[in-house]
Length: 388
Image (cartoon, rainbow, N blue to C red; front, side, top):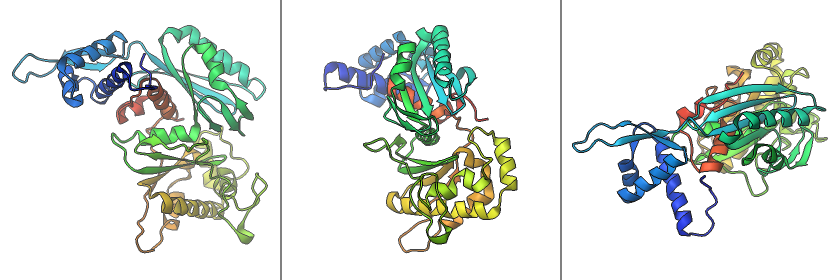
């Protein structure tokens, strides 16, 4: 199977890099790409392109399709993604339940299931669910992406307040069960990856802000996550943005943190929980005090203005349960981010795209980690479980 760790510039690493280039071209244009097209796009010889295609077919990553339209000579055979064998497991872990999806290489969903648990039974239930998947699909599993709230280096959960985990080697634990590589992804990072995948060729910085029971952020550059050297980029919830008498106490012990004003609990009331579905959140929004929503919008806008002045992002995306706050909240954030200073420009602010599924980002991260390729926007939207 392809590896994305090429190490030294050896003949084998060059071969793997060319395989990834060829595979990405098929992923970008499935059903229309050909061997000749790969040779033209890569500058490789026709014989080398044919050799790469043969290896990708043997690895059950691509398949031959119909013949392409004639251009005057022999009609070329088109190439498509092989969706019949390899699967990506996506596990979205939340405090009291997890969503599981198996995604084919073309981004289509093969199987979904949900498991519920308590804090006490969470570990046993997750291990049992992963063991069941391994028994059913083990030989077909290419990689697994595990999405969760908290900081992670891709291998261990460094800290998750919501899950009450600290320094948990979760990837290693699941790899022992699955026998396939496992990548851990922070939930906000995963949402940001999913949003970046909306565009075929994303460019520039994009700031993604998740508002739910807490506040988190992630930055992508040209569609790739920019996590920082200590895997803690985006921890903005406890940055002070409200001062004086207006500063509320925060659960961290300080006052005036962004989370103390712009998390959904302070805006919607203590009844809010990340476990709520969209209809329950909308019911809370309907009864929420407008002054609390306005306070949250002002605090969020201050953070956006500061970060935007530094990064100059192409846009700011608000995701998580906050997408149910409606147009009034978004309009207030937009008004509060306006400032007429010379040399500045208004940064577009929008809600996350509802067509991007909850677990699409983790699926994309696992695919890239395993094969070094990306889905097209259409394929990414098809991946994994739709939002509730």
